[in-house]
Length: 220
Image 1 (tube, rainbow, N blue to C red):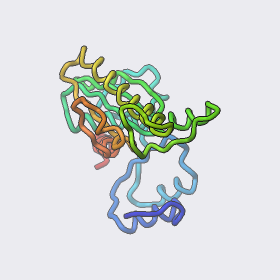
Image 2: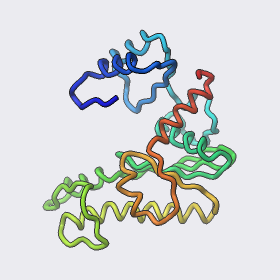
Image 3: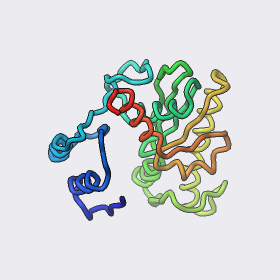
Image 4: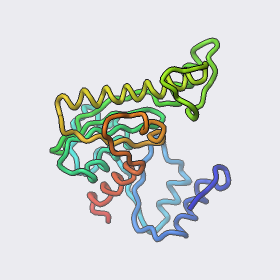
């Protein structure tokens, strides 16, 4: 079901989802506070729901020293990748507003990861923190060497991120030679064709992880 931004309120969208689909159980995952009206609507629906948190039962062991600060999307993506490749060392790269790099070993231990600015954040930063550089979109030509200011910025950002990703892959393969690389997130399509290493692109990795967590919790 497709909705256009501003056409419906959040509660109207949820009402339509509940009417259109036979939703039996749900899991709520958000990096922001859930508005009270959304919370009330979810509680009133007979399907029931659980709120995802790193303290709930998970199919992985979290070794992160501050799990309460760990983004739910990072955990869900790792759990989703493990479901796709159980018993393997895994590096999950989630290219969204920020780019996260998260490592899970073959025994299911989540070691943690790193966070870097995403494509649009880098493009905006170049514009906002310099005197003359324009704000450039991520869509367009990305030559090896920029032939004008626009392509120089776009190529510098996107190709720079790809080199960054290649560097992470090369470094982790020194210790875990058989590691599998998963790429997900809203910007994965802008990066996939510029990355030379063998990777698995899966835009639904976070959703797959949340579904696994729901099943692991004994809800479905």
